[in-house]
Length: 398
Ligand SMILES: [Zn+2]
Image 1 (cartoon, rainbow, N blue to C red):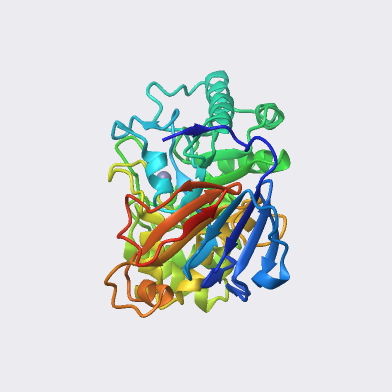
Image 2: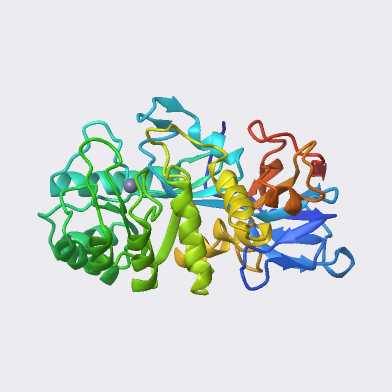
């Protein structure tokens, strides 16, 4: 529940030892041969065998007790508004609850649930800058929320994007949730955003709530956003033929969300696999939404895609970590020297018939989370939300 400052104060050295399985987040090598990670001042400084790495003078030592360490999960599609409160379902502490589901980084797809959301150009720019600033200062539970994602309106001109970028805005909210719903206008503004280093996403599929509209394959392909937001619908998906057209018609990110159509998510996964494009698959919850908030939504997507989509669990974890980090140029998401020391430590849930953590996920069970770490600082221990982990890591020294 603590609202932590972005960085730790003073030098820190974290050692995680006795790691049973180390997931890298990288599709090309999802499992690393190492039992120890060292992080200095919040960044990974060594990965290897305990005897080979410098573990002296640690400020925190975690004994993983043979459990699994993975990069902290990234939710590529959330709708935050202000602080750790969502007006959509009037819930508080939903971000802190996601941390208990292993999510250490979130990307806003637009602060669209703001009561009285301004739609005039100066108002929407002000709101985006406010959201970017406030979520960079406030990190509920330590979770990094990349927010400040304006929803484009027809009256915007190129200078608006230049001004937003100069003020620190790095994202566009879902194209299609505002007044711009046609391909040519979307394409022009997405290109302006890209020119100034602002990433973009689009609402794909049928309307999400009354007042939102249909965005079909022609608009999606013409708009050419960096990420095809919820290609499996939010919640109403496009027909399979249109999903295939989008997969084949561009090389942009294919985002699968929890609050979408599960069958369409599996169809997208199969299509991407046939194309040799699994690196394009990233995961989000698209929450808060009409179906509430899902603290375990990313874990549920991993287990669903692994079990029903026949994807090895270590690959499914990459969809929610390294793939997203690379696509969105984040410094987390991979167990790699120099990256942010953001981790989730898991074990198979108690009484899962799976023999190992990976086996249990491939059988469709959720893992039990035993600890989360952000910027080298332990944030939570045994999760209050997941099924209980069989074994949990332990802090053995400060
Ligand atoms: Zn949407």
